[in-house]
Image 1 (cartoon, helix red, strand yellow):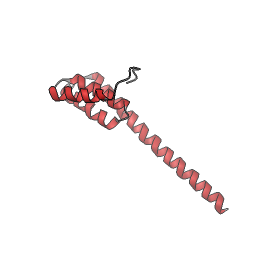
Image 2 (cartoon, rainbow, N blue to C red):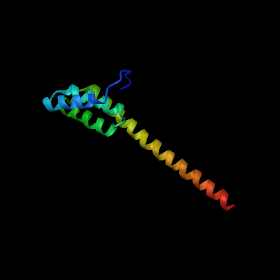
Image 3 (cartoon, rainbow, N blue to C red):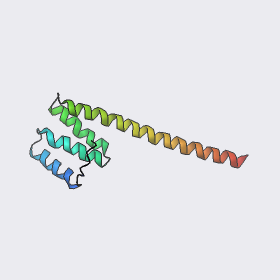
Image 4 (tube, rainbow, N blue to C red):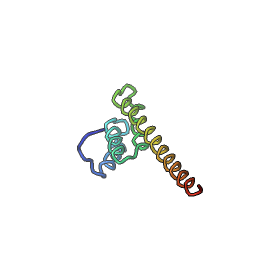
Length: 100
């Protein structure tokens, strides 16, 4: 997930074509998940990781990647909620100062 190699946007399309060609070949699913994650399309990446596990039930790398992605998704939702609550609190305090 943290590779410094830049993947062009068209790589996702290439992986999708490979999947269409052979839906039982695991590698394009894994690489599509990496490319989608890099574009912050975590839900789409999760679909591909789940497919890897469906095809290859003992793929420990995919299982680990899926768990890491799950954790990142949970954290990003929590961060968004925290930011929203922080904004709401700041707005409340500003309103309270205006009233008093």
